[in-house]
Image (cartoon, rainbow, N blue to C red; front, side, top):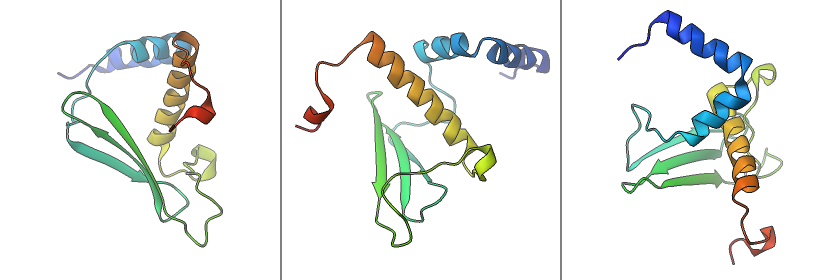
Length: 124
C-alpha cells in the first residue's frame, strides 16, 4: 500500500505541529514495520570510533535485544558511542532520531512504570 503525497504532507504537518502527541501515540501503538525480520540482527557502527557499534535483534517471541559493542580503540577516548547530529557531520541521522525516541520512551516508562530498584542494583 502506498500513501499519496497529500496524506504524507498531512502526517508531516501533524508531526511538526504536535510532536509530543504524535510521539506518545507512536510509542503506545504496537506495530511491526515492513522489512524487519525476527532472528535478524541490525547493526550500525558509530560515527567516530572504528571498533564500536550498536545493534538490535528481534527474537521469534517478539522480544527485542540490544547489543552495544565497544572494543578499546587506542585513538578513542572512552567507551561512549557517538552518533553526530546534522551540524556535527553525522553519518547516521536516522539513528540519532531513533535515539531521541528511545530517550523519550525511557523517560515515559520511568514516569508511568517506575522500577523498584536502584541503578547500583542493576546486574545483581
